[in-house]
Structures are given as structure tokens and as C-alpha cells.
Image (cartoon, rainbow over all chains, first blue to last red; front, side):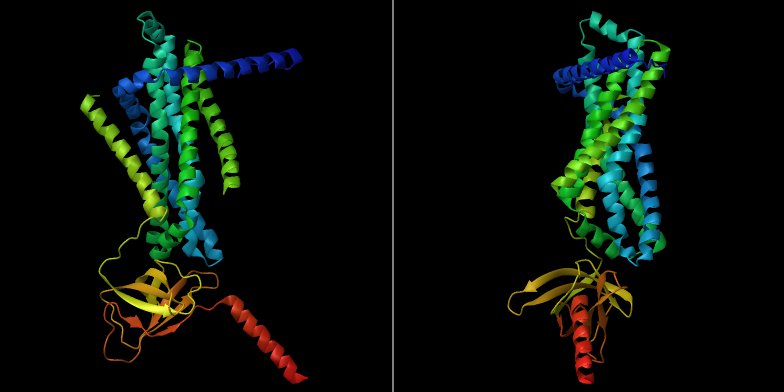
Amino acid sequence: MEHRDLSVRGVGAWTVDNVLRLGYAARFIARTIAASGTSLARPRLVIRELYYTGVLSLIIILVSGLFVGMVLGFQGYHTLQTYGSESALGVLVALSLVRELGPVVSALLFASRAGSAMTAEIGLMKATEQLSAMEMMAVDPIARVVAPRFWAGFISMPLLAAMFSAMGVFGGYLVGVVLIGVDEGSFWSQMQSAVDFRNDIVNGIIKSVVFGFAVTWIALFEGYDAPPTAEGVSGATTRTVVTSSLAILALDFLLTALMFQGV
Amino acid sequence: MQRATLDLWVGIFVIAGIAALLVLALKVGGMSGIGVGDTYLLVAQFDNIGGLKTRAPVKSAGVVVGRVASIQFDNERFVASVTMNIGKDYKFPKDTSASILTSGLLGEQYIGLEGGGDTANLSAGERIKQTQSAVVLERLIGQFLYSKAAEGGDKK
């Protein structure tokens, strides 16, 4: 981080800079969405990006989901056993995954796996003047480069979060039922009677859609706005991970508070 | 990467994602019933089933022999009619009794079957005649208080 001037003038300049940047980011996302026609007309562009953001993130999402679920199985069993209600293990694992851990942890992993790659790629394209070259050839780089990546991230995030949760429930089942020996029927039946489709699963999906939007937005904007130097791209990549992680956590709090009142 | 391979992987990715959503909706959210091997049905009627849920275990001598398939309210006799899926390998005599028990103080409820001495076995779809309802804690406390009060009255 660069040195910050803490005088009144410095704080003022910093605030104005950031508000300016936020305005630019808003204009950027509006332009991206407006330029999505190319992605619709040429779905192959989106499919290619789906491979890089979605398919290549599969391993880390599936493995982390499995391990988070297995740890939840152990820890949940340890706590529930004190009250003689081990049979509620399924409820604990499923609710914590579907409502919170699934969307949040998979979004954090997505930001560091796919978001940082997006920023670095677009930042380097800018640094090597590929984006300017496209403009010279009358190709809009936002329509050709940015929009397909945006839609790919937007589509793959909820799918990855669903896979994370499903894998986590399976991990909890492995540890709880197969390893420790909680009754299989009560594991599933209590889970099924406690987990509500509308209030738990759909809300989890809404969260992951919002996170997908935020993470891809931040990653693409940081890449597009990166200073065209090696240092600039590396700084932009770091900022992507830090800003999107903070955004995910803040948005999660907001969404949970909203949904909590709704229930 | 070749076009076809790329398409294949993205296709697998999307299918896996949708499959995960379906698993969440059906298996975790409980929008379907899951079969349990080869079974036959038995029916038992209880005055009160307490907190019994579908898919709760049916045990005999502590061994899980089946699962609760469905719970309905009998409109004519005002009792709960519980249908159970019992494993094909387990046979119970005609005078078997069914009771709703709780595992532990706060645990889940299950159905306990206790075999009688009859030589003929229950066949599929038959009703278990002797049943015992779930113990409702509030009622138990009420009875206890009444009996205490009655004792106090006697002493005077």
C-alpha cells in the first residue's frame, strides 16, 4: 500500500478519488451489461470463459466442499452428542451449508481462483495493448473481452455454490453416518423436515447469484482499470481478492439481515 | 484446447451444477421420498404420535427393521394412522404390539415393535392391533402434579 497523506486535504482527496472510481466502476458495469448482445449472438465466447472460470474452479470447490462438510460432521457431532441429539446432525450440516457456508466459502474461493485470473488476464491484455489494438480494429473490447467473462462468472457462481453445498452434505454424511454411525434415516429425515426449499435453498441461491455478480464485477473492473505495468497488474490482482472478499462478507451480512426479517 | 473438448467440459460442468441443485432440492430439501430396498407395509393406529416423523426408524429389540412411510389422520376414528415399510427379512407375529418411543430425553421418536407369541405372522398391509401412544411430557407432568396434590389431601 502506498503512503497515505493523513492531513484534511489528503483524506479529502482520497475520498474524492474513491467516489470517482466507484462512479467509473458503475459506468463500467452498465456498459458491460449494455454490450452483452455480442455474448448472446456468439455464445461460444461465453462457453470458452465458462471453461476457464467454472470448469477449472471445480477441483478446488468440490474438494473444499467435501472437507468443510466432513469437518462440520465431526464438530457438529461433538457438540450435539453432549445433548444426546446426534440425530440432528443432518440438520446442522445441511442448514449451515445451504444457508451460509456454501454461498460464502465458494464465493471466496471463486474470487481467489477465478477472479484473480480474470484481473490478471485483462490487466495484461491492457498492458500489452491488446485492448487498444482491438479498438483500432473497431472491435469493442468490452463486448468482445469483458462481457463474456462477466456472464460466465455470473452463470458459474450459483452452480459452483450448489456443488459446494451438495458435496458438503455428502461429506457430513460420510463422517456422520458412515464413520461415526449416526442413524441414516434420522440423518436424512430430520434434514428434510428442517430444510425448507423456499427459505433455505432458494435464499442460498440468491446469495450466490449476488456474490457472483459482485466478484466478477470487481475482478473485471480491477483488470480493466489496472495501470499498464507489471506492478500495476500485480496490485490490481491483490486488490481484486481483498475487495471481493470484503464485499462478499459485507453483502452476506446485508442479505442475511434482509432475509432474516422476511422469514 | 480443442473446441469439442472444451464444449464437453463446459457441458459436464453445467450438468453437474444442475444435478447439485436437484440434489439440494430433492434430497436435502426433502421434496421426494426415497425407497428402502425390498419391503412390505404394515399399518398401526395411534391415539397420539407425538413428534414422530416420516422416515423415522422402526425398531424391534433395538434393531432397525424398517422406516415410517407415511403418517395420516384417520377422519372417522380421530387417530393417527402410521404406515411402515418393514424389511422383507423381518417377520412379526399377529399379536405384535407397536409403541412410540423416544431415544434419549430429547432425542428423536421411533416406533418400537414387540413380538408376541402367535404362530401366524402379519402379512403385508395388515394392521397392528395393539398400540401404545407417544408419551406427552406435559401430560406426564400434569398427572404427577395431580397425584402429588391427591397425596397431600390424604395426609390432612
